[in-house]
Length: 148
Image 1 (tube, rainbow, N blue to C red):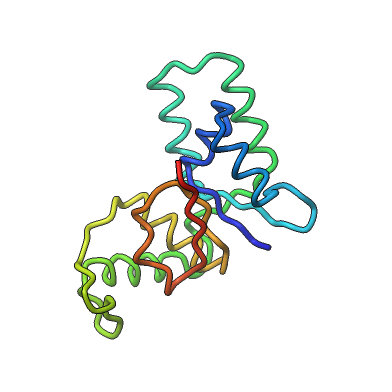
Image 2 (image 1 turned 45 degrees about the vertical axis):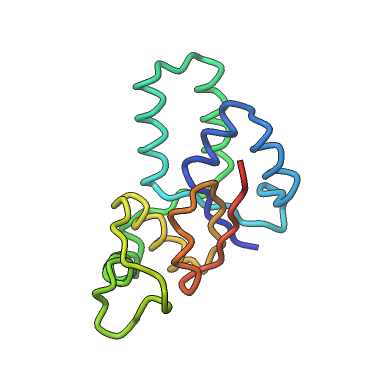
């Protein structure tokens, strides 16, 4: 299985939270039969969080450990820019050919979330997240939302 992990999953891993234990048991992200990816956007987000919150050596070591295990995906990867444009326009209900399902309203997503969604779409990966902001994008990629 191909997974893309959201930055909030990284934070749970670094904090050794019960949520990450649940994710690890349920998805076994780093087993040999799974390919676990991470967007360079998520890497930047979590490194910023580490600096702002002055993470100590132990948390930084755990961050490095997970970053060594996951395959980094760069937004310059072929197809991601086009996917970004499609997902952003779709989310705002302004896509020329794709419409939101009936009853769903347009939304402005955080731009980093759009990059992450575009990456999941191009990789045909299942996004593992604790963030509900991706729910309307299930037509583009698999989504595994983990309740906190």
